[in-house]
Length: 419
Ligand code: UD1
Image (cartoon, rainbow, N blue to C red; front, side, top):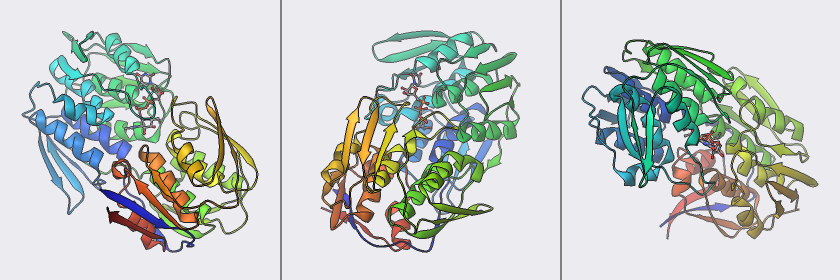
C-alpha cells in the first residue's frame, strides 16, 4: 500500500507551479456531452477523478483520448448513446452525477444510480433534481436510481435554496439547449462556475451572469467543438500558501488568479503572511511571526470549505486560540482527530472547532480521511517533529497532481513509500 512519509522541520524555498483546477475540468468534461463536435481541453491535471469521469463518458460510447504527454483531453461525443453508466463507476465519484444535465438535454431522458454520501457528509442531490423539475423534467426516484424524462427541456426561473456548486452546474448544462430562457437565482458564484460558462459560451451557448448569484441562460440550437484551457486550481494554490505559512518560509507560487484567491489571501494576510502578487504569480512570505484568526467557511466569495482542513493544520501551531466554523458540510472535521494524534489541541463543538495553538506537533501515523484532510496531514507533517506517515493517500491523489514531488521541489523532506 502506498503511503506518504514526511520528515518535518525543513524550511521551504523556491518556486512551484499550480495545476489546472480539477473542479473546473470535471464539469467541463461533462459539458462535452452537449456538443457533437470535438473538444480539446488543455492543461488537464492527470488525476484519478479526471480518469474516472473520462471512463464514465467512455461507457456512454464517447470517444475520449487522454493525451497524458501533452496534458490534454480530446473528446468527441458524436456517437454517445443513452446508456445507463455502471453504478460502480458513478458511486466512485459524486461528480459523475454532472453528466445528468447534459444527458437529459441531449436525450430527454436518462437513468443513473443515485450518488451516495461520502466522508464529508450526506451530500443530497435534491437541488439538482428540483432544478431539473422546473425545466419540465419528470423525476422518478426508486431502488437507488434516478429516472428522468422530459418531452422537451423548457427554460424557467429557478431559485435555489442553497447556492450548490454541482446543482448550479447541472442546471446550466441542462438548460443551454433548452427552449427559451432560464434564470437561476441564488446560484453558486464559484470561479469554476464562471469557467464552465466560459467554456459553454465558447462553444456557442448564451450564458450571462456566471460568477454572480443570478445566471441567465438563453437556449441555443447547437454547440460546436472548441479548444479550451481551464483556470488554475485556487485550492491547490491555497494549499501551497499554507505550506509556506506553516513552515515560516518564503516561496513563489506560479499559476494563480488573484481575484479567485481573494478569500484565502485575505485570511492569510490577517494572520501576518505577506503576499506580493505579480500577474499570475505570488511571493508568499511567512517568515515573520503569524497570529491566529477565526474562520467561517461560506459559499464563494466566502472562505472555501475546501481550504478548511489545511488552515486548521496551520492554526494548530499558531500561539493563541482560534475558532473554525464549517457551514457548508455537516461532517467535515475528520482531520481534527488525526491532528490531535499529532499533538494538536482541538475541541469540536457542533459545527465549530476551537483550536488552541501548541508549541509543536509530533509526527506519527495518520490517515487521509478525505482529499483536503489528506493535504492537511501533509502540511502538519512538514512542521511536526519526527516522521509523519500518511495512510489512505488515494484520497490525496484524487485532487493533487504529484503533491509530494512539488513539495520536494521546494525543499521538503517528503516521499511516497510502499509498505
Ligand atoms: C463542489 C466541489 C467540492 C466543494 C463543494 C463546496 C466539485 C467537483 N466539488 O462539490 O470540492 O467542497 O463544491 O464548495 O466541484 N447540497 C444539498 N442538496 C443538493 C446539493 C448540495 O443539500 O442538491 C448541500 C451539500 O450536501 C453540501 C452543500 O449543499 O452540504 C454544498 O454542496 P455543493 O455546493 O453542491 O458541493 P458539490 O457540488 O458536491
